[in-house]
Length: 113
Length: 114
Image (cartoon, rainbow over all chains, first blue to last red; front, side, top):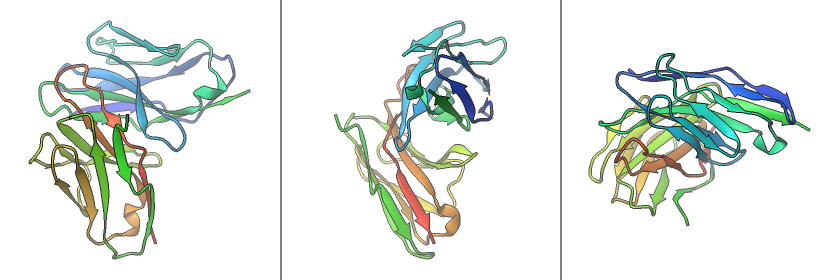
């Protein structure tokens, strides 16, 4: 079956630090990959996505590259802000079938001023 | 833009009580989902509906039932609530037409069963 593994949190950083949140996946087919973000008290919203190998998704200074050879989709940001404090979910979408997203467990990011 | 609307936002139930969580989307999406979010467990799929008139079990369906009332609405029912069903419940929807398919989420229902 499909699964997504994310690094355990919480990740605690100072403002302007470099961020990496690791994500690896297992899939039976050739999935699309996503990062969603959940701000306190809200639902998840799409942060970025990549639909094929070597694609780079980017948004709001965050980036992730679809690495098929290592089955990874690590999230990075060069300089985090306090407003980036949230929970980040890596997800895959097995296309061509039921289109059900599979989510990782989420990684909490806390950014201190 | 309403997107995905869930009601209620908060609910406290006594063990054995029943309730229905409502979800509606206004984006003409064909697929809808119910997830529960628990600390350390991430999002787990309870039920989903790939299209109007169809529903299927997800990873954790026990203790729940669903109804896809029409294309817009997908409700989740707890017939006899248990403390293990204390969680945050999210409804989501998607167009499910290709590799770019993005899921849109409601703001969640925080349910406590005492």
